[in-house]
Image: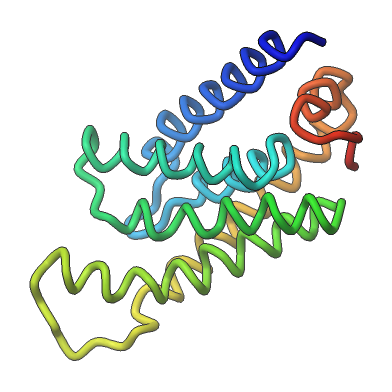
Length: 174
């Protein structure tokens, strides 16, 4: 495939993943939790790898913050999870590694980083724990991981999924 054509395919898939995340996350939202963001992060990591998954999560978070009034938690929560989901999948070559990357990235790292960001954002240095967001973030990632698992089991059987995955990975990864 020509380089320009491959880049167009990659950008098209990236755009579709951003659109899915922007549309699905507020529809299936539990107050303080965004499990669909975890679903899309895991699928983006398995389809596009770490760099494109990180770009997808960052752009999605910025869109959600500006159009839906979501606080910076959208940015701190999603970006670490998407990056680690892609990295763990790339090197582990299994869905379970991508899910683990999302749980560690969003559920633990993202939740801890969210505390100082929200202190800066709100101007309040309330005596809260650095782990104030951790239970909700881990809960959302576990719900999202379960949904992503079902989705991935279906997608991996599709020829189209494997073809799209081959755009981003030199060899197809199961």
